[in-house]
Image (cartoon, rainbow, N blue to C red; front, side, top):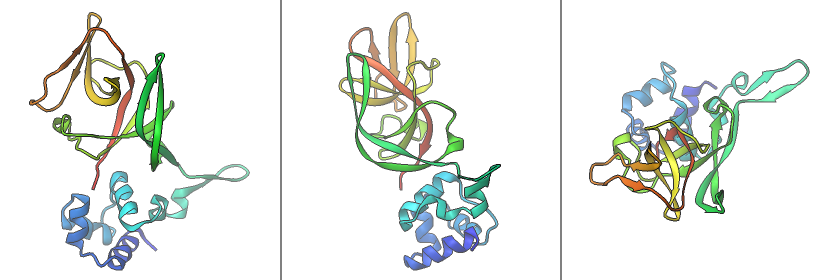
Length: 204
């Protein structure tokens, strides 16, 4: 069964119109129509949302040849990995701990490039200017060093916050992407960069 047929079959099973499904995905009904005709393919973030809507694995939407590749002697599982969605971050003695795993998210390996990755869930509206909204999933690469002006998860004031980070003469500036929030200027105290934002998975 082709991808378009799979989407159409699942949509009808749930009693949804193309417009209904489009609204859940934040796309135009014409996009859903094009997917079902196999004129176009949804991107991975939309496939992830579709898997949740229909209660199927992301790999359901891939052809067998996409999911398995032949090696010299055996078969290897496709580039899909399950990464934890972290509900809480703590920091003791300078060591960051990822706690309260609320679930796992199927993630293509080609989103990853070495290192350790996990998801945080966005809270509030402070990063709306970067199109990051409450409830969105944030793919974070765990690292302590980032470039000036990059968006990172930072442990501050007892929780993990997502901000654009600047460093100036030993001072850390945490900048929101919403003009109603003032920059947070930190000269001392318990603050630690947890990791860099690598990708945003939009909530539905």
